[in-house]
Amino acid sequence: MPRGMKLFTGTAHTDLAGDVAVFLGIELGDATVTTFSDGEIQVRLNENVRGYDVFVLQPTSMPVNDNIMELLLITDALKRASASRITAVIPYYGYARQDRKVQPRVPISAKMVADLITAVGTNRVLTVDLHAGQIQGFFNIPVDNLYATPILLDFIRSKYDTNHLVIVSPDAGGVERARSFAKKLKCSIAIIDKRREKANECEVMNVIGDVSGMDALILDDMVDTAGTMTQAAAALKEKGARKVSAACTHAVLSGAAVERINNSAIEEMIVTNTSPLDSKREQCGKLTVLNIAPLLGEAIKRIHEESSISSLFI
Image (cartoon, rainbow, N blue to C red; front, side, top):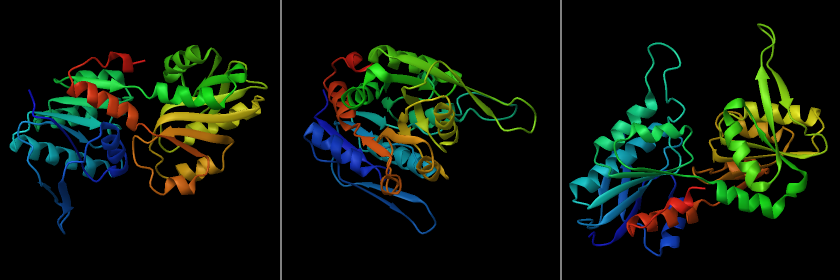
């Protein structure tokens, strides 16, 4: 049996790691992560980890490549320091959208990153809302893919009138997610059909379903540049939606995303803190950030105790 549990983190999201440590009632592991002048990352563990069950919390969000490298180096250091078991806790899994070949002569980057994480000695992976569930199969080690659905559902039930709510999928690929969400809330769904009618013309957003006089909630797993989501919000307003909100697990918010959301018809953007939002909270007053720490903390606790976590997969 492991001597006990330890939780380490890199520089990617120390706030979330701190919240998880508080939930678990432990101190964060003592490690130093610095950068040489040429950009090389240096990791040093400042405490004994021999025989411990160690969890490394590190979302691979922006800057993606630096954060992945930190995760790999911390894991290698733990392996060489004789940790009993190493679990990579990756709330946001970068490169997840590159999970297949969409054109000739391109890599399957999500698989390559999975190979790297496994190669350095990781024994298990814990993540949240993978962009594509089949990425679990890219690993030859156990993967627990949690869902932020319970956290989002609790907030929506407490604030929204579900009798006048319609869940909207921003594309055909998200219909299953929207249907499952709507079923739990006992409300209807709508779908955004995006198509280009003619060459060199702007894409047209068609709304499938009745949203007139309803509060529309656009549901997605992540928001990156927010282009599709803000266009969908405008289309819903044109179709008579009384109010448009949005919810997602991963708020990547790259490029002009914050500006687009601020200037859009979206009144509230509900997200979780799977990746750090830094100054984006202040820049975008429409953001409501829900803490994912209790979900991660409970999963970590159950993994350490070798108990079932299947009840968390709803």
